[in-house]
Structures are given as structure tokens and as C-alpha cells.
Image (spheres, rainbow, N blue to C red):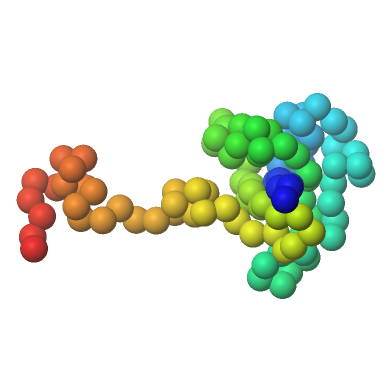
Length: 110
């Protein structure tokens, strides 16, 4: 079982492609790392850069400082690509109990 990682540029795609290529150490027109037919779980086909987990994670963490919008996709073997759950957890709103633990709320109602 092997995992493959992909980074899809969003928003200003030209700028995002340049920054992704620069961080991957390749040219923006490198067709070896660009996958133009990435089949995803939602049935859509996307253009995304093939990279390692470490490269995808580094790009995800530095997307704000690079000024890019990206989506990270993972594919197991030759199956469809999907957004990994650890990335989806960043989009969830915190529960009241979590806010109370962080002392954002002073009291949690039962």
C-alpha cells in the first residue's frame, strides 16, 4: 500500500503555480510533477502537483506567508484522491467545551 500526495493550486493559479514550483525546486512548466488528470473522490478531475508528504505539509503550513491558496490531496495506491482528515480538522469550528478549556468562554452551559 503506497500513498501519493498532490497539491492543487487555487485562487490566483499562476502565482500559486510559481510558488509551488519554486518550493518543489522545479520549473513552473515541469510536466513530470504536474498531474493534469488527478481523479478525485468527488468525481472531478484536477490539475495538481505531485509531491512528497513533507513537501505537501510544508506548503500547507506556509501557504499564508507565500500568499497562495492550495488544496492538498492524498491517493492510496491507484484509487481516487481525497482530502486527508487531518487537514479537514482545521476547518471545523471548535465546540463550546473546547472554547471553555481554552478560556475563551467563561462558562459552558449544559
